[in-house]
Image 1 (cartoon, helix red, strand yellow):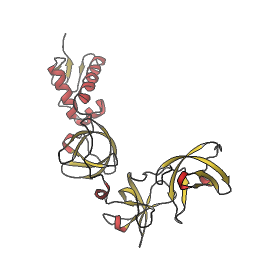
Image 2 (spheres, rainbow, N blue to C red; image 1 turned 120 degrees about the horizontal axis):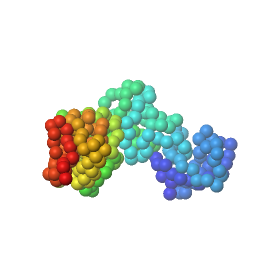
Image 3 (tube, rainbow, N blue to C red; image 1 turned 120 degrees about the vertical axis):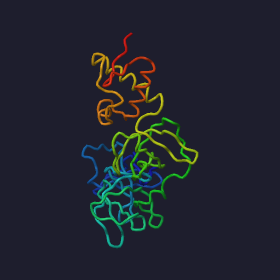
Image 4 (cartoon, rainbow, N blue to C red; image 1 turned 90 degrees about the horizontal axis):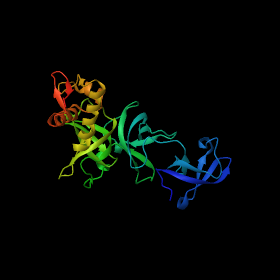
Length: 279
């Protein structure tokens, strides 16, 4: 069945001067206005469209792609502020997304950027935005295992690090001490679950944990040493930026990999640099 607020693959039922009508199943026929119809469309094709209600409460389709769909979080720009209704956000569609005053966490002005979730207004049944993030994240314990890959959206900063929205569902923490460089609000990243604590809080990292992180990295270091003739000017005193640029990992992960190689007697520390151990 077609879902409002999501992308759907719908069949064309008929063509009119206004555009194409699509089969919305239980939702009935849904108009795709002519300005959104692809120039090379075939009448027997199924179209990938996003469904929403327009300003007159009619269900319509568009081939435009929103920056966030229903239930998803995004970092959106305020286009203008209405004195009674709230802030209107650019979410990638011709029709802007309303962030009502009641759903704002702070006053906003045109040009500001804000993290919101796309949700349904219980009074109007239309899609709106809400910046009250904590009200919309999943309160149930997260079912993650250590090392699971997750999608992150950085939400806020604290002395400990950065709170991130995990997979459009939960909140987790990236510890500042484990990061090789600062992050910014609204930044998206691929991350990994370090631990789900008994209280349900999620500790996150940008590098895979445990053996899954160290084993591939140790072989990457050995290959780099072999390519460089057996010696590299990198060691546990190298800066985080140098390590991230060369190996794409945090300094902590790099040091753990060097420690593993040293314990296996595969490398020696030259101070500065490392080299392959003699057979």
